[in-house]
Image 1: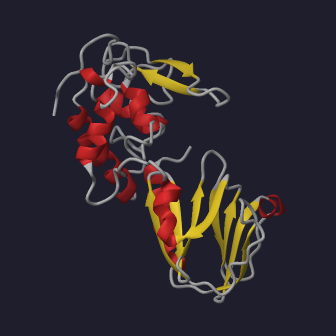
Image 2: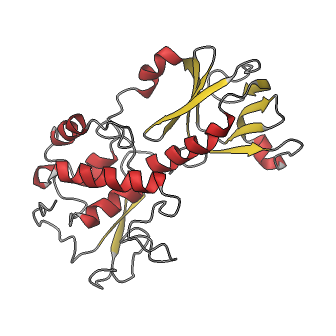
Image 3: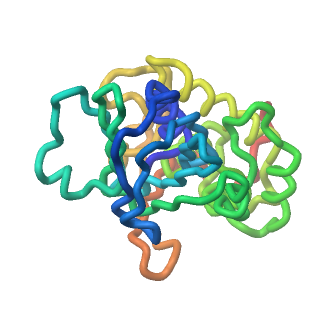
Length: 272
């Protein structure tokens, strides 16, 4: 699933159509499927965590979420999507300049009044990529459930928005935290400060996207994520993993850690 930095980069790429007027287009998914978008002008793109907001000049907003399947594609004048991708399009915007923007296999498509964006985003926590980042609120929400595991607390978008499985796994390694460490044993402020630095770096540096080790080469981009059965890049201990079902009906997510660098039941290291 794309994480906050992924969607932040997507919004930056889609800003090339800001100011463009839609000649023809429609929603093909969600409760407003069939609604025409013709005549609107795209004003801006914004994000909150993993959510994308496309704002139009008629005071409405298109709210979308990629989850595991979605993507956006911009085709040039005279170019078409492959048949299968076109069949999966949930949003189409053909602009007066000849380009066409396609939202492919988007599981969430909502068209709402811009004034209602807060309602659509619900109880999401502060976004690590917003400036300023409301660290105090995020820290308070994380600390409100002291017995919860740090992994579960960070993945809960109601606490802090933008972290997914990859970032949580890498953050726990860098702070020396076993994924099951209770929040009450964690320096929450230090954890959030590191999370923000890492996400901003990944979102804004062209050569740093989701590289947590500083080594962009294949097989060495991450400390633990995707490295089950391989030696830890720091201590050479074999990385272990497990699959964890977080909600009934949801697919399992893999959890990685280094048994030596992230010992279970050890108290968190309060390192700044």
